[in-house]
Amino acid sequence: MRTSEKPAVNAAAGLSGPASRKLPVPPRERKPALAALAVLLILGGALATTLLVLNSGDRVSAIRVTQQIGAGQKFPPEALEEVKIADTGVDFVSWSQRQQVVNSFAAVTILPGTLLTNQMGVRASTELGEGKATVGLALKPGQMPAGIQQGDRVQVIFVPSRSSQGQTRVLASSALVFAAGDKSRSGNSGQITVVVDSAAAAEIAAFASTGEIAVAELPGAR
Image (tube, rainbow, N blue to C red; front, side, top):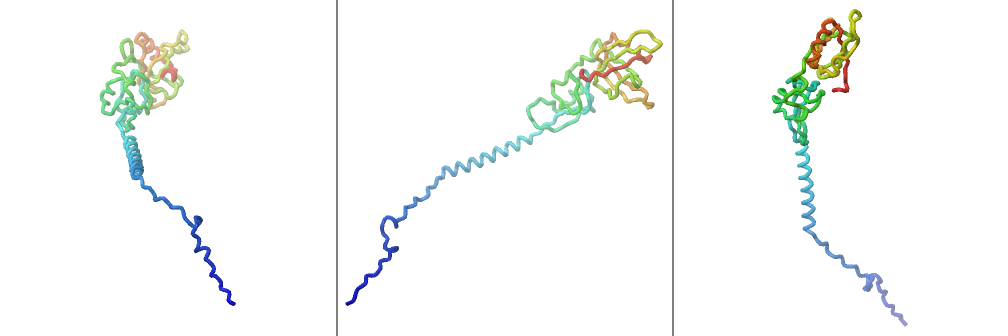
């Protein structure tokens, strides 16, 4: 007696239940509006960067002072030079106005390397105005400190010699050094010109002629 065997059922092929079914994948939804917005943001950022670079490259011609100029002194043409600077909105004096500058006077002591602004100049000098006089002094070593230059402030002091009578006293408490010459060829004297009150000019000149004048620098009075 034959026993008929039923063919084995392929379990893998015969699965038809829920476990064999894959979940449907939804189609990707395209969003053209977001893509366009991203492109606009990128372009806007690039444009802003370009504008910043262009603006940072803006340059204007300004005036820079190359030597010390004392308060009340006229601006010498050789003390001015043109420089290109970024336009920051500060009222620096334009190089095109240099002719007006050389016809004006420094309102304060201006140090080398300073960029000139409108507040630093005035049309009339209070130092060289009425009631003032310039006096030339020929000083020996020991009668003036080293490095005195135009624009410095000094005390003019009477220093009596052994043969003269009197006591040491200040003749001008804050005189402006109007000019400072080089030392003589012998190196034994220095020439400076100071601005003093006209009432004291005659006495200072008289003592200077006898070598009884000394000057002391006032660096804090610039």
